[in-house]
Length: 461
Image 1 (cartoon, rainbow, N blue to C red):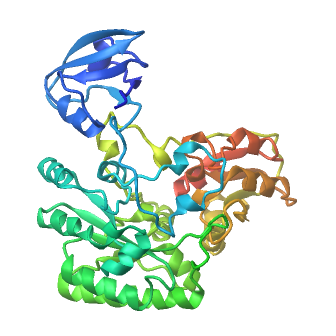
Image 2 (image 1 turned 45 degrees about the horizontal axis):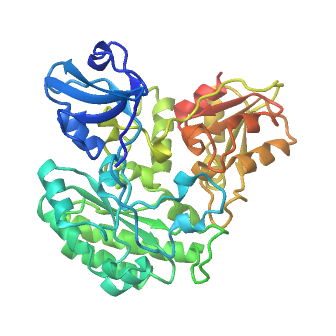
Image 3 (image 1 turned 135 degrees about the vertical axis):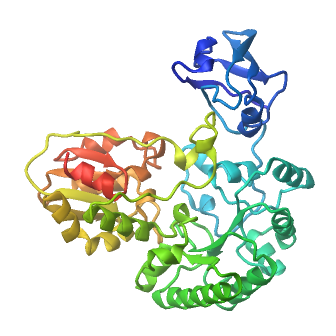
C-alpha cells in the first residue's frame, strides 16, 4: 500500500480553505484507508470530511465542511493506492514486449486492472478478475469497462494470451453484461492467428453470446522491429480488405438483429486497404475514438464544420477520470505541452509534422487547410525508425526521429507544427525533451493538438 500525495490544491476550494498543501501525504478519509481514487471520491462526497494527512513527518486530522457532492479541491499523485493488478498474460502481440530497452520504467508496466479500465479506458482481459471484483463493479456501477476479446474460441484465446485462463475468463464478460454493466470490446487482429475465418467465428459468437456489448473495435496488430516473435505478420492491403469485408458483413448482421452496428474497424485498416473512411453515421457516436477508430472521420467532420462556420464537438475521452477531480492524468493522458515560437524563424510555409499515416490523411486536405489559413502549408511525414515495423501513427513519434527529420529538412520553413499527442508528460516516448528537438530547427516550433483547431491556431500564430 502506497499513500498518495497531494499534487495540487485548487485555489479557493474547501481543501484550500482548510489549509491543505501540495506535498501533504493522504493517510485516511473519515477514518478509512482508501485503496484507490474511486473509493476516495465516494468518501469525500459527504458534507463533512475528515482527512488524515502527514506533513513533514507529523500526522494530523483536517476537518473540511462543504456542500454534499461538491469537489474537495484536491488532485492526487496516483489513482491506485494499493498495488496495481498487473497482467500475467504473455500475449505474443503485446506492444510492451516490443519496446526497446532503456525507456522510462512506466512504459513497461503491464496492467490488467479493471479500475484502470474504468478510470482511463485501458483494455483488460479479465484473466485476473474475481468474484470480489465483480461484486464491487456491480455494487458501485463502475462502467463503462473495456475488455480485450481477441477471439471467442477458448483454445485460440488462451493461445493468444499464452495463459490457460484466457480460455475461460470471458465468463466474466457474460457476468458483467448480465448485471447491466456497459462494456466495450476489442479485437486485436493478428493475420494468420485470429483474422479471416477466425474473425468470422468471433464476430458471429459475439453477436449471439454478447449482444449487449456497447461496441467492439477491430484493430490491426502493431509490430515493432524490436519484437522477438517470428510468426507474427502485419496486414497486407489484400488481407486488410478481406478483414474489412468481414467487419462490414457483421455490421450488417448486427444492424439487422440489434438495430446498431456493434462492430467498428480502425482507421489503420482502411488506410492499409486503400479504402475510403466511412461516413460519420457509421461510427455511431465514436465510442472507440481513442482506440484509433473514427479519428480521421472526426477530423474531417471538424474541418467541414470550420469551413461552414460551425462549431464541431470532438469526441470525449474514454474512461471517467475527468469526472473524478482527484484522479491524476496518468499514462498517455498526461498533460501535453503547448510551446510557441521556439527558434529563430525565417520566411516560408508552415510545416505540418506528422507520422506516415497522417501523411496519407493530410495529402488531399492541404488545399482546404491553406484556404482556411491563407498561408502556404507543407507536409513533413516522419518515418518511425525508432520503433520500425508498421508503427506509423503520429502519437508514437519519438524525439530522435523528429529531430533527425527537422535537421535534414532542406526545404523552406516558416514554422513547424508538432502534434502534442506524441509528448505525454512533456517528453517524447524515447525520453527526448521538446527542447532537444527545437534546438536543431531553422524555424519556430509550435506544439499543437492534432485537431483542425490546433493546426489552424498554430498556422495563424
